[in-house]
Image: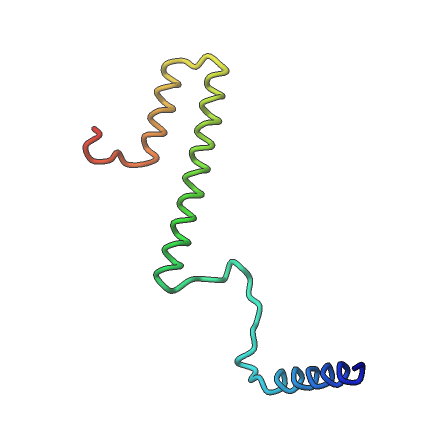
Length: 99
């Protein structure tokens, strides 16, 4: 039994060595930095862009909540409040029909 296991291991090692020697240099897997990975197909590129936009939107909403709580803590003058609203308004276009 022991002899059978060691011979199986030896055959496996030889097979791995032979396979690794026969792989062409162009076919070897080369590690690349994560930031260099780009998706070319429609499915993954679209999904990646959707995830990016959702994350950015979540950060904007989170920051807006933080600013709202900061404003609630202190007395904000009317002119400063309207200036803040104007700056928020410039961040995105107003949808059609919401004039």
